[in-house]
Image 1 (cartoon, rainbow, N blue to C red):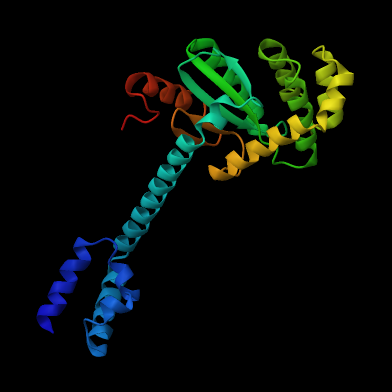
Image 2 (cartoon, helix red, strand yellow):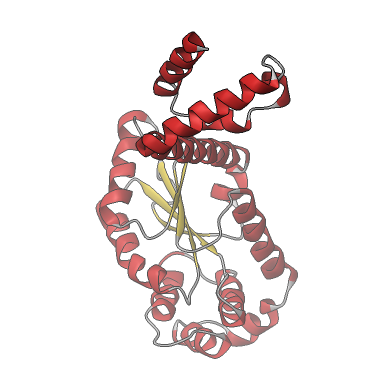
Length: 260
């Protein structure tokens, strides 16, 4: 077994995922006798105990591959969902409606990170005249968020562009938890026809629009806000102006959010 020990020690050094051999599938184990399998597992276990960095590197590599797989799946979902993501009748469009660089933001009016990220959105629109910014209501933080989303979606049936943005900013800068009362007050201050607004809040257009966003979010594996789609890439979390701007610049440069 001296040759086998030497071979396996070299294999452990060469393959960061050698730990997986401890629980090798039956098809692989059948190539060895029970005694050989026991010795192989013992050798690998002993090696990993004496060289824990190998296991740490293996776990890091596994995590890296898992993230890459998730990103690939999300990118495919973006392509499959492109019409609903970028051209839905239920969405609000800010910035250049014909912009070549498209960004979708999934937000919740009760999300503190979304409130802080609003400044990033405004700066992006201001400095990038070729950006088409799409807002999607993603009320995941409780009943108040759902109520605010219903009001906002009903308001969108009346307003778009600057008038909707004025409402959006009022509600995003409101103190405390936002719900029906705060959203209605912001809509009234924005000049909405309140009778039409309240009639539309529980209507089919609002209901189907919010349901569509939930379906898209599920397909993209989104669980929180803010989340973005920048070009072909899903970006989760309040990543900040610099990161978003870098991805916009990449789209201009190579056609993708990540030119790597």
